[in-house]
Image (cartoon, one colour):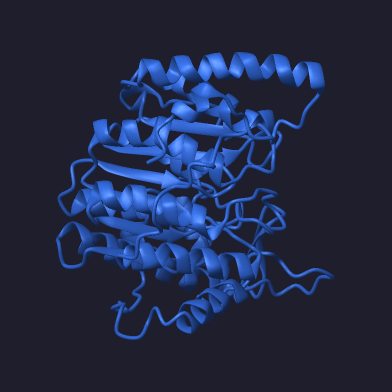
Length: 379
């Protein structure tokens, strides 16, 4: 997977580069998280038949064909070299095997440190630095291994358009995404709160689209507490996959958000506590080497049983976060039981904050405070 790299020399290196994995592995090793604590599972190549669980035959052939060329591109941003097809098969196979082992009870949970990432890969198109959809393949592996219901939580700063498309009409997979959206002007432009799935899958896509950058821990945890966890409890998945992009982390050059390692740890802890294990974390994006290293270490510590502690009561949502969470709650209340008092409190707080922000022209990323916000559960 380290051999997958952009061959073409440019003034600025491609953000999705081998150093990402090196930085994470180095950080985990330096933190002492490998020594006797983790069981390393060898990677294997996914078979072409397995890849066609979620991808078209023509897509698989197109990715395989890149092995015949020194340099290939899918669109302007998604490169491949003659090792990329192998790297993509190894990434997919690793996720399939880890998820299968989790569902069969052979391991409690796992962290798939893989690249290229996958959540933008559509059933028939490679895009957004992604060749094969690793999380989608892991979900199919879980169902094949005996799980009846699988949840994918995608906290990458970009919407996982590929994962959503693959399971859009499938009620056995719940797809939940928190992402920067900006009314569709932030890549890839999909993931509006109104996108809820189609046909049998209607109500099984949950989108929480941030209206601006600068979103941080407070808003992510507010979304988890008020939208995600109530829905997860009702859906009751047999296995959960986290599409763990760390490009919403503070300092990321592409994401422009403010999530800290502590925020990622708390989100993982909420899911870990509910699932009692049965949790697969799959690496997606994240392009600041220091941020992804620290964030991955924080997540792995939770998987190893180290609690991040209580969610700080000082973490209150921003106006932008409250706006996005309130909209998601209203839409998802058509399909899931959303606490009416929480929704009423949010709407009252939003109405008061809206007036204040219009009068004072405040930054929408400023925290919103008030009696209703203080009454919100803190985890």
